[in-house]
Image 1 (cartoon, rainbow, N blue to C red):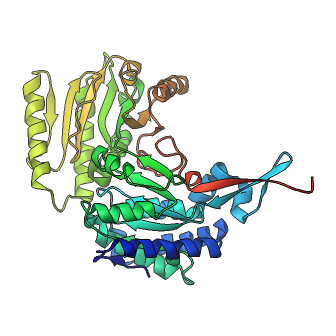
Image 2: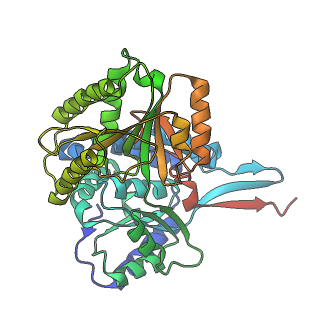
Length: 418
């Protein structure tokens, strides 16, 4: 099983590792169907022992299932790709081949992200070198142990090198960049900018998943329906709780379309009960002092900024609901802090999106109305529009881009006999 090297000191170690990974990718082709079979066993292995307690592993298990990945591969690369065949394209034929070695620079706030990024490259037949952030070494180790158990012949394990080194060690970052044929970069603005500036080969494929935020929205008919309100509130709470609201797909703001006959306070009271229930089921075991301070400041400033604002929260910093009005998305606090804003028209709020919004979680009663909102969201930079409760479901496209195809080369062959 590949270990996470804790003592990388020399750039040559990275160069040598990438040379070995490239030889594996060149000499040993791996059919997508074989990869899917290993992933299926990997998903089952993640439901055992302490690894199942790693945050996000439930979603990782769903992602690794054949039922999830096979449709993605077919959509991105075609049915023939599953069996390693050429696809007819007029008088030519097409086939996807791996780019070689893919380097991964995941963000440090999502425990499963190094693995998710790596799987996208492996599905294209590539080898992978992954820089594991310091806070994710242990969860990554546990997940890779499950892969070693599932990958009986080591077909995928031999294609992976896990590296852990300080984010300020520019020599190792540069060695890794120079040695790869593709890169998948995740994280905040500063981290993304730093990695994008590294000396990648001119032929390298580079895909960036930068900082985004997400919001939810409910039309008047949805949030005022007392028969469905409890169910919607449970879905919202689940979306807020996952990944401690640090993921780009985490809802930071919920827009409610105004209804003259129903008080939003009633909805917030139902949402409070859902938050309390979710907190009992998934209590926070620890919290950074800086996050506690940020939550306290958000609560106090919200109440002081406008006498009409309301706030609902326990004495602890476990969760916070801030109720107000307006179409501007407030600066996210995270830490299970949800701003609920009442607007006259959801279209007005969506029309103010500036491209920073990645996911829009919707609860809309009328299909024609939802179509109108979805088209407006698409025009204003939103990449994913989903049902509330499914904001974190990892799928392709992500941030408006395919996940597997960018790390492949689509080769065109025209026969010399024609």
